[in-house]
Image (tube, rainbow, N blue to C red; front, side, top):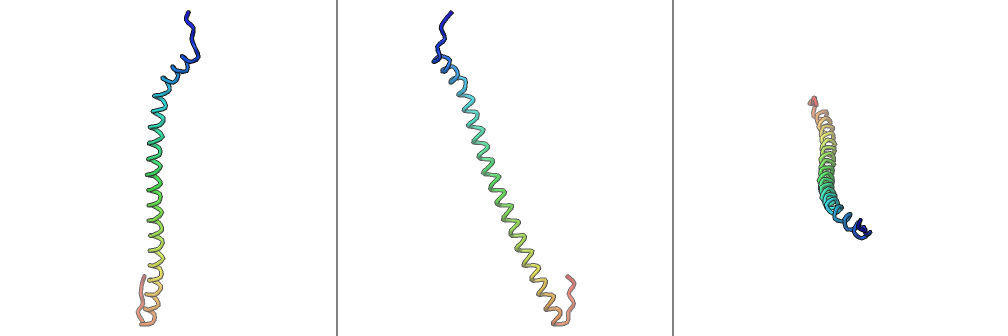
Length: 79
C-alpha cells in the first residue's frame, strides 16, 4: 500500500477544480453581460415612459388652450 500525501491530494483537487472554476468564470461573465443588457433595457424603458408622460402632459395643455381659444372665438371643439 502506498502512502498518500496531503500535497498529492491537494494537487489532485486543484486539477479537478480548475475546469469547474473556468466554468464558473464563464457563467459569471455571461451573467454580467446579461445584467448589463437588462440595465440598458430598463433605462430605455424608463426614458420612453418619461417621454410618453411628458408628451401626454403637453397634449393635455394644448387641448386645454385649444378649448379656451375655441370658447373665445365661438367655436365648439369636440376633443
